[in-house]
Amino acid sequence: MAMLTEFGLIERFFHRPAGNAVLGVGDDAALLAPSPGAELVVSSDMLVAGRHFLPDTDPFLLGHKALAVNLSDLAAMGAVPRWATLALALPQVDEVWLEAFSRGFFALAERFGVSLVGGDTTRGPLNLCVTILGEAPAGRALRRSAARPGDMVWVSGDLGGAALGVAHLTGELRLDPADAALCLARLYRPEPRVMLGGLLACLAHAAIDVSDGLLADLGHILERSGVGAEIELDRLPAHPVLAGRRADPVVRRCLLAGGDDYELCFTAPSQRSATILAAAREAGVPVAAIGAITESPGLRLLDGEGAVMEVRERGFDHFA
Ligand code: ADP
Ligand code: MG
Image 1 (cartoon, rainbow, N blue to C red):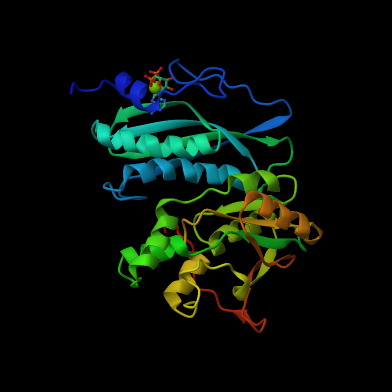
Image 2: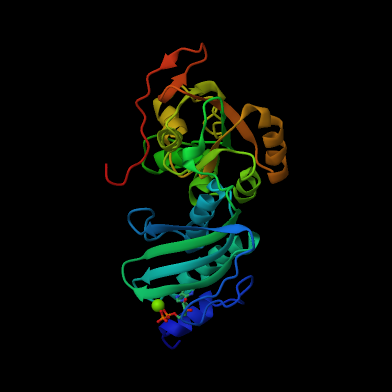
């Protein structure tokens, strides 16, 4: 087969109808028409081969994950995603890889009504950078700085599965094949909580997505809001494979500090609990109340008896 040119490659794998854009791929820039009364919400997330994934990772799953992590950031702002751009550095033109990658990307994009409206393609070490654009009702986006004393702290879905998958891969712990498959699905195919995030825009105060571990990510909310929190260990929603092994230090670390779950952690006034539970039902995602925001700073983790536990687990930091 003849070698694809840069433009042939874009045309074949990334040029789709403009969808909800005024003008999509193919010009010098895309044209977008934000909804009246909405604020534009923008975020970028990069996946680097050898850093975030191994170069031989299934390209379909990479296409999914490159977009999923970005959708998760918008969900954490309470925004509805609408458009994306994709900047790709590829070591070579591998049509089989590109076909699977674009299928994974577009399968998720179509589910959430997101149009790919542009990007950049260059030769280089494998690197995937998505920029996502979405909308939030003006003044209602969920900021990390908006938690208030008395708020309840919530977490969606369950935690620790992705990190336990990593622990299995690195041989830190052995999982049977069925459990390993469940955890690796969480690692490779995160489900961004897009609908829940959108519904929380008018309900929650602060939110963040759990990408570096609950303690680290909730810590960002506390720091930016100038508040503290009391969290009850027994109320943390653990991934089913973690249940029954919570005493194992590796499992405990996955639950408290495991990254890559892409669940939402958010705070909201306690009077809104019933509304939040209803929103979660509508979104089809369980949510669990795990503690409360306090005036005094710092994160206190309480055991089953309400005693403060020592916390050594820390989240992931690329430069630590
Ligand atoms: P320019 O040279 O004007 O920057 P490019 O040649 O980089 O344009 O890209 C041509 C068109 O294809 C542009 O509309 C650009 O947004 C789009 N594009 C390039 N790479 C990608 C990609 N990986 N996915 C989606 N659109 C892309
Ligand atoms: Mg360009």
